[in-house]
Image (cartoon, rainbow, N blue to C red):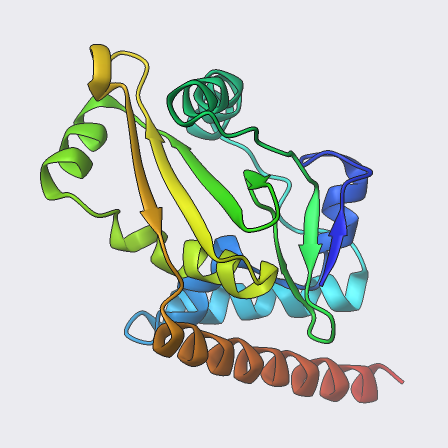
Length: 205
């Protein structure tokens, strides 16, 4: 594992470091066997990045911008509620695989945090359901796998909600069977990327 703490997420160096790698934010796409188009689309994106050596995910929308604006407040709310100090890093790389993650924060030597800024209806659904949304499981468990940390706090922050409903925090532990399956799928995905890149490079020669 290599931790890049010399650049910020969203910077040019961050985009270049992630370029051509399978990232935890897209692990759900890799696992989306029942939605072949999602996996196939991500596969083509990573292949294109490998070939061009240029990042293909610089697109932003209004929801992403809103989340970026609220993230410092969400991080402060998390720190106030838990007493944890969040270490911001750029990217964490796997030692041997072309894979990595961009944690919202690392905590001491054992933990990390995934912080989501959400609208009130989503916050309400999460609190009432308990646990954390399944759509984020691959990312959170992927972060645990790639960093080797012992726990990860899932934090959902909705500034328009009142009082204690504004910040929801759940401690998530590694699920060994899930992580083993996730790692196998990521390795398979990366093998496919390698094979397609090699095939296309032979054609271009």
